Length: 177
Image (cartoon, rainbow, N blue to C red; front, top):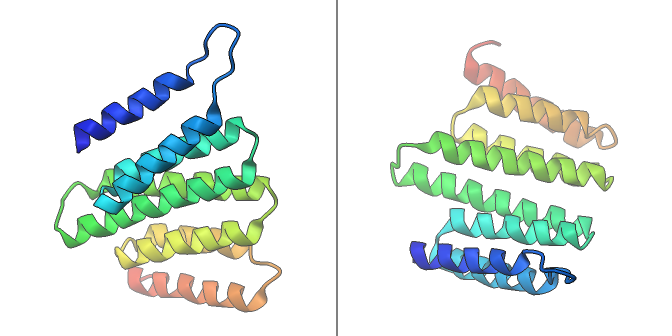
């Protein structure tokens, strides 16, 4: 499936190349990437599916649909995280690359939500990322993203307090409290 997936991905990307006096058909490419992403997700190939969702987000960006672009980037980030969690449970060793991909995709989605003035969604994504890092016992990184989420939660004091409690639990886990 890996080879077939890559060939399909490249074929869709080839259709997007500009031709003389013709604009690329981003809506058609978006639908094809979406179909491929759903197939891969169904088969459990989370990383390739995440790559396809990022391609869908790029198509949405080209069509100037920022909300959908943020949504599909978020979906890609979730797939990267589920890939990381699957790799942890299957004792797959090189997790660092998966974690970096997941973190970068989450941060991209956070910046997109901040650009469209939706700080509560950005904060939720940061909490989601921090919770996953905490579960993976990466307490220092988790604490960093809990703190970033806290800065975005100024209008929701109860959630901000709960986030500070998570920061404290990270400090305790690190032995710095």
